[in-house]
Every structure is written in C-alpha cells, then in structure tokens.
Length: 180
Image 1 (spheres, rainbow, N blue to C red):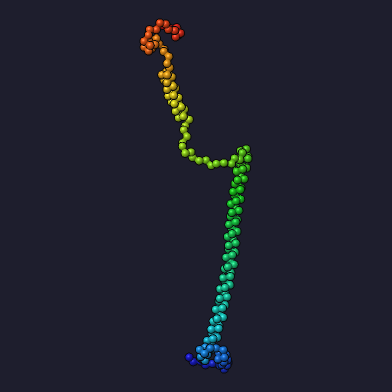
Image 2 (cartoon, rainbow, N blue to C red):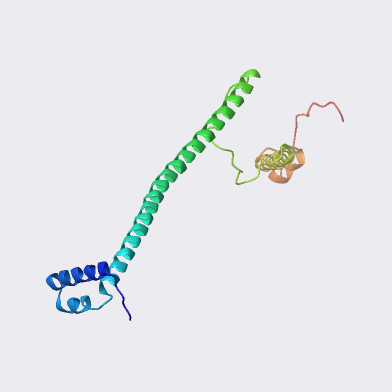
C-alpha cells in the first residue's frame, strides 16, 4: 500500500503510535506500527458511531412499538367492553319492548318455571279411550253377569228342582207376569 500523508496526518499517526506503545499489549502495539493503523482506527470509530446511531434508531422503534402494543391492547379491551355493553342494552331494550307489549294487551308477565319436553310415551286420543272403555266395560259386565249366574244356587224352574232333588214339585208360586 502506498501511503502519502500530509504533515498533519503524520503528526496524528505519531501521537496514536505513542499512545499505543504506552497503553496497548504487544500484538496490538505491532498493529499500531503499520502505516494505515491510525486511519483504520478512525474508519472503525466512524463505523462504530454510525452503528450506534442505527442501534439507537432501532431501539427507538422498539420502544415505539411497545407503546403502540399497549395502546392496541387498551383499544381492544375498550372495544370488547363496549360490545358487551351494547349487547346488554339491546337485550334490555327488547325485554322492555316485550313487557310494554304485554302490558298494553293486559297480559300478565308469566315466567316459565320449566321448559316443555316431549313425553316419553305418546298420549292417547279421547275417541280411542272412549272406544276402549266401552269394550272393557262390556267384557267386565258380561263376565260379572255370567259369574253371578253360575254362583246363584237358587232353582228357577220346577224342572231344575226335579232334576236336582229327584222329587216331584207339589206346588209353585207363579212369576206374576200374568201370561200363560
């Protein structure tokens, strides 16, 4: 490399070398005696300043993003609260409208104690119940009449008495219907 330095640059290089020999370690001292060393250091220092400015810029952006994130969380929370309040007000308004409609028609506001359910067994139609009741009553009455007749131990005709006792009937009381 060809370095042509002005007298001011040469004085600056000598000052840097003197400082390096007084304060730097041995291998750093050897680097300090290279011809371009002071200017390499100056370039690196300029680059470090530029990098520090970029880092400060990015840190500022990061802080700004943190603040914006906090603001966004606040806004989302406010939107959710406002939405909940709106839905509550809509529901209350609808309840008030229904209550006013019931009041205007003089209908008492009735609360449902238990929700309607489908019955487990179907209900029978009234006509089918009447028909079933008629047939059941007919069977029970015919059966009762037959049972009473079978359990009655009285004799109805003189022939029954003759068959059962094997005796002749001497007298009998007429039934009273007046026919012969």
